[in-house]
Amino acid sequence: MIFALLFLSSSSLAGQSFEDNSPPDLLKDFAILREKINRNPRDVASLNSMGIIYAKSGRLDDAVRLWKYALDIDPRYIHLYNNLGSALKQLGRRSEARLIFQTGLQLSNSYWIYYNLGLLEKEEGNVVAASNCFKRCLQINPSFQQATRKLAELGHNVQLPAMDKTVKPMTLGSYKPPVAFGNIDLYPLYPNGSWPENQAKQNYPSIYGKGGKNNLKGSFTPLTVASCSEIIKNFKASAKDKYIALTFDDGPHGTYTPQILDILNKNAVKATFFIVGTRAETYPEIVSQASQAGHAIGNHSWGHKSLAKLSTLAGLESLNKTNELISGLTGTTCYIVRPPFGHTSQRVKQMIHKQGWHEIMWDSDSRDWENKNPDHILFKVMKSIAPGSIILFHDIHPGAAGMLQTLITACKNNGYRFITIPELIEIAAGTS
Ligand SMILES: [Zn+2]
Image 1 (cartoon, helix red, strand yellow):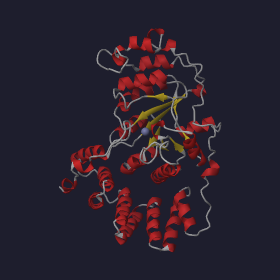
Image 2: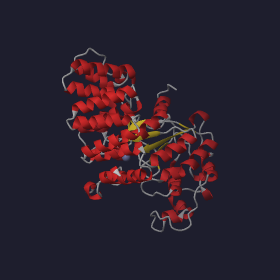
Image 3: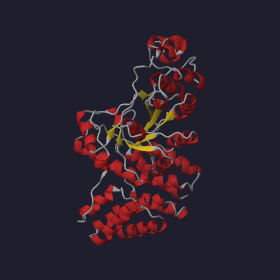
Image 4: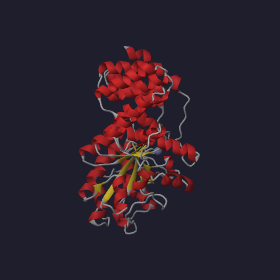
């Protein structure tokens, strides 16, 4: 079989190191995709993603072969034209690249392909052809700022991005949920009428263990829809303040993100995904699908490096590159940023706000990367949830998918709705 020859040996990708709680490395994606392709050798989305893994590990020729093979299976899979054309261009095979882009455009009026073809023409010095490509791009998607910028570079008198005028920068530091938490009395909400840590240790000794460390051996009683409802119904919130925002960081992941999307979509719940650029590049289809289903896509940087440690220039480059990818995949302009690891500073905030973007943190942390047991994750969430909460999950870990249905049902039973971060910002700005 063709891809049996192409598969990388494990060692060729080894040697990468990531901090805890960082996106999984190429090897893990490689393993997931290999399994999927083994099960279904004609799974074009996975073949597309696998090609990206090859490209990222420096094996562009193999990527090209894989994408061509995938195109034979499904010549209508539009991402392949983009990827294949870009790889060919990078390999210096420009006329082949042009042909691939043009073929893609016959199938789909993709402004993203027009953009890439425009870049190729611009690099070749074909100013008129390049201008026409960028203009087509803007006809299809007038808010595609990159094309506007390129037209300006080619000497066209164009209106430069309007985003800075339409989105008001937040000036008060990090975005905080609009609902005050002061009225929430946690004590009566938990079993035996008392919450704080010592009581929690009595109620859930198996989680806390003797030394207060997490330990799930023993008799831990998972929370159910009924027990979650007991907690939620004691929240004091007027009907209009009964909302929760679910956020998922670090993805997309080839297995867990689709699982989460399934649950959300079945329940007609909208959430926000703070994606990492390098991962979205590997799983473009998942980002497009999430956006089409009405979920919001946020920027979690290109490579998940701490913005507090990067220079302003490098930080902005990482965020801009990710925003461009999001635009390409969703057709929308992204203006919400969650700094990796939640690392921020005055300088990072300023850098984000100056672009007209919002810095988005969270106030309920599922810590789903630390303990992957869904019952424990639900427990963590219920401990910190309140009306207006922004809950933090990670869709690169398996736990959230296991508890999401219980959380959603309990919240809905109590009249809570789920909103995205852009909706939350509108509420905070009083425009909704
Ligand atoms: Zn993260």
